[in-house]
Length: 495
Image 1 (cartoon, one colour):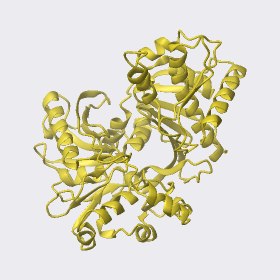
Image 2 (image 1 turned 90 degrees about the horizontal axis):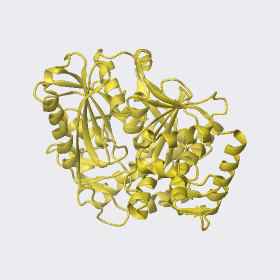
Image 3 (image 1 turned 90 degrees about the vertical axis):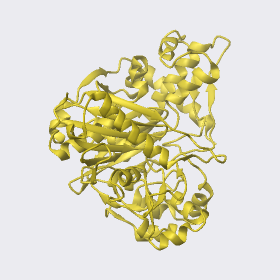
Image 4 (image 1 turned 30 degrees about the vertical axis):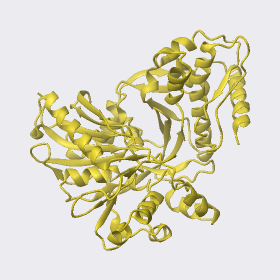
């Protein structure tokens, strides 16, 4: 049995599943439990979740993890929460019942609203206050849609009867029996309503989107007092909260300015720590709060690649040229080096720094000799080229920044071939940690450090363990030639 003073429970509530992970004092995973839940698609471009399913799966996995580890509530020093960002839930303060399904971050139903506001010239105002682009991705237009489209909801909201929250707030509310309506600065910074410079909900933005202030949660530091829960038996303090990409930044111990983490899942999310300076991007990147501790925000530039691991799934599910994702590297190594084949995986448009929703995927350079091996290689290479595009945009925005330290995590990083090619194309080292569950680890560190049972930033950074460092092996001339071919391919798919 673990020492009760040091065991931390991380609740990792994601887009397709809820997970609970128990960490010991050495930051090792003791046990983890996972449960998927329904994805709802009521109309084209709409994506919803049942908030009660989110809560029930989170609760069930937390209970399951304790049972499997043979631990009781008294053995847990604190709980940390990390969550899918931007997903929007509104519920009744008295009954705790949602007024509508959660509208998921992927949902595009408010695209027309965003386009109208952009045409009216509001994007520069929104970006200057929030660091975000005017996009359906974020919470503000989702909140407005629920207020305007669900009968009676606006009147109830204006009377103060309703509460809005992202998934973290919804979980905190339920964990504390409705006693705590709060969020952290990272989740607030993704709402398009929070001024990341003043650290407050912004009255001008609330007026623009016609959202009553009474709906909103209290904003706290990422390591803070979010109340106590007794749903797992005795009372446990909730002491850490951060959105998933921010939690991964913390789990990778990217505490210093110039450090960067890149998470390779379905898509890829890269965050570059810019320190106390909220750097304004001139390359369509997002400015966001990386984390906030002791009332002090640390900022980041964020870039999103829509298709990373999803391209490997495409090889498996649509093309059928591999049976499992891990076969992609093996196949890629068999490719003919002389062929210059490029896949631009714009299956759902191109993300940062292009932000072209109308671009579509294309395969370039194919000949009669091109086969499954060359297509597999082009697919893995495309993830590396897209990362370079992000890194170059970040360096252009932060020209004073020295050599970037890149730490990687997510499902794709187990692929040694891809990580080596990434180092070659970036012409910089790529560090893979021993613990790749960095999102949950970041939430656990917030809770553990606040509880006083895990070390501070400096101590935690020293404990970060390298599994393998990939360093560039390719000549600059060869690399530049390959990148030039990629740039030509991207120009051809831009709408």
